[in-house]
Image (cartoon, rainbow, N blue to C red; front, side, top):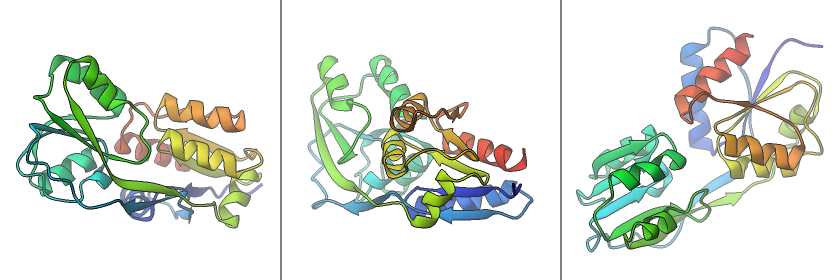
Length: 230
């Protein structure tokens, strides 16, 4: 069996290109990569009027589609934080993932009312958690994550015996990929960004995965590079 490992990236195009760039900066060897996004990011509706809100919550850079008017922002992820700053938001708190953000909001309760800028699919009930804190929150779906089928090349790699590395960056992407294959191949090494993503993958395929030491893009890139060099 060939020892050449192929990276299968199922992130949206722009995010996948960013991951490849980060890997190449750390990995000295030749990189074989197949890109097969399982989601396309599409804007939804017009940008909401944020002027009535005291605080904004943003859990993805994809949700930053318009001006943030200097509003205090609680966000998830370094890329989202950068997008918030570039859009004129006042970054107050940045958590590595939504599961970490929720308890932080209980100790640093955001001023009300709150606007939650989100996608059509979310993994955590931010609005519900804020309601439990008696903080009114209005959710705005500003983008959607449209599902896309895997390419035939990606499916063959994920189901085959040749060494392949599959990073999974969310529970939904784990489910979409798992639903698209008949089984996880013998040569497949899966790296999940969180236990929730790993559980979604196991639920769909019955197969296990490595879980990154932290739910961050940097931790995922580190583990991908480690898998490529192993």
